Amino acid sequence: GESVGLHLPTLSVQEGDNSIINCAYSNSASDYFIWYKQESGKGPQFIIDIRSNMDKRQGQRVTVLLNKTVKHLSLQIAATQPGDSAVYFCAENSGGGGSQGNLIFGKGTKLSVKP
Amino acid sequence: GAVVSQHPSRVICKSGTSVKIECRSLDFQATTMFWYRQFPKQSLMLMATSNEGSKATYEQGVEKDKFLINHASLTLSTLTVTSAHPEDSSFYICSASYGAGITDTQYFGPGTRLTVL
Image (cartoon, rainbow over all chains, first blue to last red; front, side, top):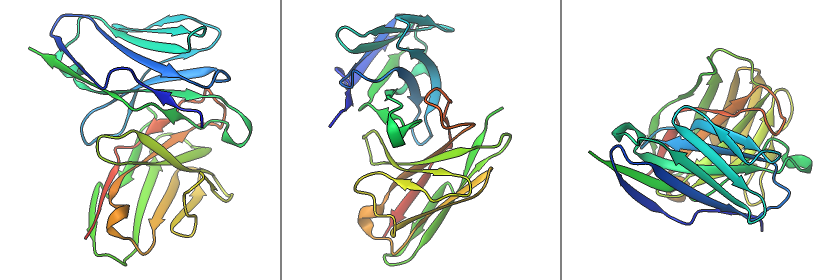
């Protein structure tokens, strides 16, 4: 079936460096994508989202890039801080039929920030 | 705003018993609530979607008679794991959204850790 996956299961960066977390999606009909941050033992926290009619969106210290040609999504975190250490999930929503509003989560990337 | 709570945060029960988990939207009315399950070091898997006042829609492979979902009001949904077994041990997370549209943000609860002995 359709799935959302990640290239890198773990990522270790030095504090202050930029982080890039990648995600590949397989459903070409997906038109809404979200990045979530999940700290240990907690629920996912919304970071940023992007619609398929855009290829870039910026937030505070975060940027999401969408490449529909190769079905690739990335999350860039500028000046990574120890508090950014968590597991990051991408999620897609195709909005089709009875699954309108349903999210399909990728496998997750664990980001570790070294002080 | 948009805070979602879950209760309990952690529960341990004996095999064969039933466990109820509550999900509440504290400061908004949630038209739609979602229930997810997450095994250790794995991603979230959607179990079911519920709309207030109607029957939940279960994902393929999720037993509706085992995982009973009730969405009695716009601020409360409950998940009851009936006759729990050790393989049901997992992290159960709910989310709530204002609407059912694809861009309606889902706000997640803190999760409930279920351990079945």
